[in-house]
Image 1 (cartoon, one colour):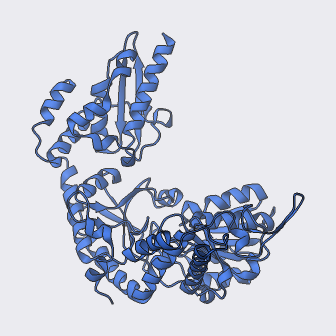
Image 2: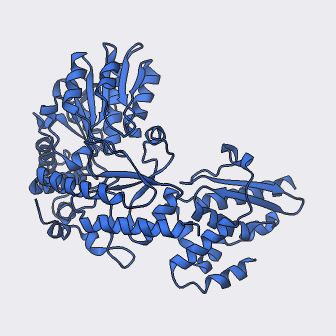
Amino acid sequence: MYDVWQIRKDFPILQHGVNGGPVVFLDTAASAQKPHQVLDKMRTVYETAYANAHRGSYTFAEEITTEFEAARRTVQNFVNAKEAREIIFTRNATESINLVAASWGEKNLHVGDEVLISQAEHHANLVPWQNICEKSGAKLVVFPIADDGSYIKEEYEKHLNERTKLVAITAMSNVLGTVFPIKEMVKSAHTYGAKILVDACQYAVHQKVDVQDWDCDFVAFSGHKTYGPTGIGVLYGKAEILSLMPPYQFGGDMIDHVTYQKTTFADIPARFEAGTAASVQAIGMAEGLKYMLALGMENIEAHEEELTNYATMRLNEVPRLKQVGTAIDKGGVFSFDVTGIHPQDLAFVLNKENVAVRTGHHCAEPLVNRMGYTSLTRASLGLYNTKEDIDALIAALLKAERFFRED
Amino acid sequence: MNIDELVENFAFFENWEEKYQYVIDLGRKLEPLKACYKTDEWKVKGCQSQVWLVPTFSPHSIHFCGDSDAILVKGIIAIVLMIYNDKSAEEIKKVDVEKIFAKLGLEENLTPSRRNGMMSMVEKIRQYAEAAKQAD
């Protein structure tokens, strides 16, 4: 374990506070705060070695290209990929998934094929599949989860068959916190010859991603949730699959050779990185990943597990509060409803108490509806949260409960 | 009660709790909106909570009814309607709603990031006023 109070000093925004008081930041599932190591690194690059990566033939250009490619290797190491060229930099995880849907999907999905997803998917892992299924004539199949948010193995396997060409599944639900058993799900998908894409946006923040152990075909996650900057995300794909995929955006350095009549395209990863790369963001993202690795993923997991247990227990103290998503295997994401208080009203009082949470459908509208709600309040943990943060949340919820009581 | 009286009342509040408790009370006393209007047709888009706004046009003025499933938003609706109700289209156009909300110390409710859709509602009121003027 690590000293969380020491760690918090790395995060300028947590020191800075908000509205003249300390901030209780419980919205890491939406986006994480940044340690100064990430901010310093990006500033240093801009101040000392900035140019367009993979373009110029002068010192700055060479330096930033070296750093950019080193960032790719850091990501490779973070997810334990076999090769660096299996790491594609994108704008965010949503773009990563769209890339697979547009490129792999357009080439491989046909009438009669099926794409299988769970009920717990974020819009980013649902809408791109809806769209490509509509275009290709393939069918989008959704397998149910349990009322408490748990994964149901029988349901998953029942919906897999020889028509399934792709499974797209979250490793951890952004609403329910449910952790899905990716390794065994990959194995089942592969027995039918289906490919499997893992949305690891939430999972990668809390637990170790190992693409070789999972044996999955694609993984998407973003920089801004792993303590790095916005504007950068990652698509991991097995080299043999990526190599057969056509480009989906054109221009820039993704070419091999261009004439006015015809273009041949570069190998991976360049083929999928059209236009000027978000090089400084990629370098910043790598710095965030290094920060997590230095703390130790197992330490982050242990710290958050302790807090998760504490929060689950304390939330029960709030009258009329119902937790939504209570699977046994779940991470530090707590969605809840307080009977009689609209989440927006709740969040207003929480904000007045400097407690930052998210409300709404959390970009997973069908899931929130499936759980029986149109809107939920969500608190979520990061590596910098403390028991005191949970105490502040509970105190603010109790205050809100009194504030809106009609008497 | 008119807006000037409301501004006077607001001057007495010492903290946000008192102020917003009063806003909640205004919401609870808001003229009720008939259930038959709580449909998509009358919903104001761009709000995190559900907000409905229904105009009734008279020869020289417009009367609005509104509601929300969030109680604080309902209170803010009560204030917005206090500002705009039973005015002519021309008068509606002239209202500086930001200034009034600033006087009340409620300007935080009009920022786009609050996403409670109050600005969407004000926009909608202005559109209805514009439509009424065109029809004249």
